[in-house]
Length: 261
Ligand SMILES: NC(=O)c1ccc[n+]([C@@H]2O[C@H](COP(=O)([O-])OP(=O)(O)OC[C@H]3O[C@@H](n4cnc5c(N)ncnc54)[C@H](OP(=O)(O)O)[C@@H]3O)[C@@H](O)[C@H]2O)c1
Image (tube, rainbow, N blue to C red; front, side, top):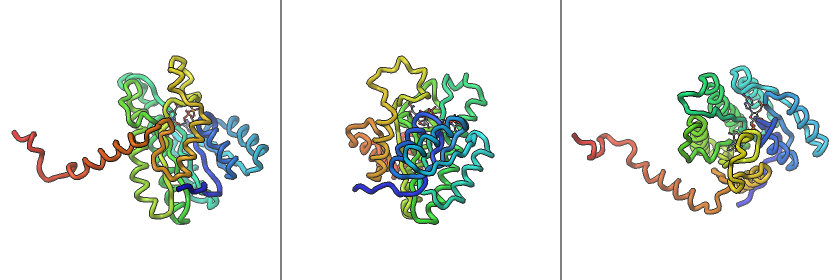
């Protein structure tokens, strides 16, 4: 079933570069007004001016550091108080690369605050506001790494598994209220995040516009989980079925017989 995106205003986090900037552009072309969030005020303002000139949409800039509680609170307040908002693109994210035992503690904390804490709090704020209005959408940028072992970027991969899991549960909570949620799982995508990835095989790297076009098509089709590069969707269905099949055995009064002394 195809359903057009809801009209209104989209708040895009991490809109100052890469995937978020392309979401902003594509959503403006689809008729959305925008709130662009990030730390880089110069990039956000440049993008806002260019999108307004190209599309005549209203584009606001909200400069906020999502590794900081005041920044998170400022975006939460906007989500709570701006009744024109109909879509949250929870895109801001970063990696802290290196073996977990060697990554600086502050870098780990910042990454987990942006990728996990801020994303969750913004989804909660948007979920509450959209539920009250019985309409809206939340797009959470996870990663293909949600399905992978990710040595040398273990906590980043785990943060993206969190985003996938959060979205699956959030869908159960919010879809009865008329709120659509989607997890997007990009593989390598040509953005500043993989600037150091010159050695990646070209066939493994997607162009950002292709990624966002596919993800928005998935959203139009009300896909809960969109893996833009995955041709055989049955492979994802097999994973989801295996997960469901475990369910009856995960909480029982007795340990399994193989653990008997
Ligand atoms: N590129 C890939 O291969 C790939 C693959 C899978 C998933 N993803 C995910 O896609 C999303 C976008 O990544 P990208 O590739 O487009 O990376 P990017 O070009 O590096 O953009 C990251 C965005 O996040 C924002 N951000 C980072 N730290 C922030 C903070 N403390 N406060 C507010 N905003 C912050 C940045 O804005 P400011 O610098 O202005 O703050 C920037 O706009 C991320 O969640 C990433 O994990 C990317």
